[in-house]
Image 1: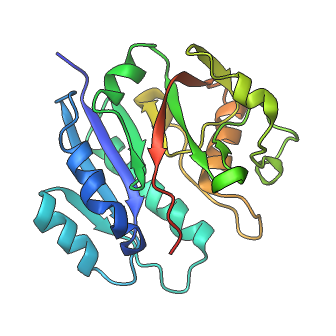
Image 2: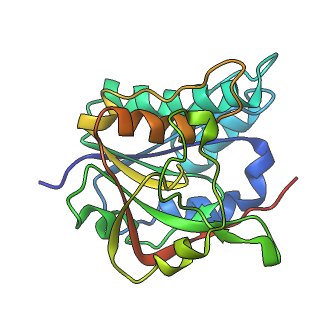
Length: 224
C-alpha cells in the first residue's frame, strides 16, 4: 500500500489570486493516497470556511491578531505538522499556496527515498530573480542564513539530486521520522522565518535536506 501523505500549507486571503490554479492542481495530483490540510491566517475565519466549502478540505484558522509575521507563519506551519502527527501520516508535503507543482510531484520526490526532499522555485522578480536554494549555512544560527543568488547555486541545477542546507518550505516532502521530532518555530526578536529554523534544526539533529534539480516549481509570487 502506498504511504499516506498529507498535502498541506499555510495560506491567507492575500494568496487568493492563485487559489483556483493551486487547488485545481493539488486536488488532481497523480498520487492518490493523500489528504489536504490548510492553515489559514487570514484576518477572520471566513476565508477558511470558503476553502472548506469550495474544495471539501480540512482547514484550521490561525488568528493573526497582535502577532508578528514570524509568529503567524510559525503557528501556521506548526498547525500543519501537528495535524500530520495527530492523524498518523507517513509523510507530509508542504506545497505553499502560490506554488504550482507538477501533477506527479509526490512521485518525483518519493523516488529518491530521502527523509527530506524538495524542489526549487524562483524568488524575487525580473533580473533579481534566482532559485530558492541555500547550499550551506554561513554561521551557526538561523538568523544568519539568508538566501543569496550565488552563481554556483545556478550551476547546481544539473538534473541530479544534491544535498543542500535549505530549499525553503515552498515544496518539500518530509518523512514522519523528521516531522515527529522537529517543530516549526520562530524566536521572538530574531529576524528569521520558520524555513530558516527548520533547516537549522535539521542540521543540528543530523537530518539531511536534499534538492531534486530535475524540475522547477512555478512560483506565483505576486505581491499584494
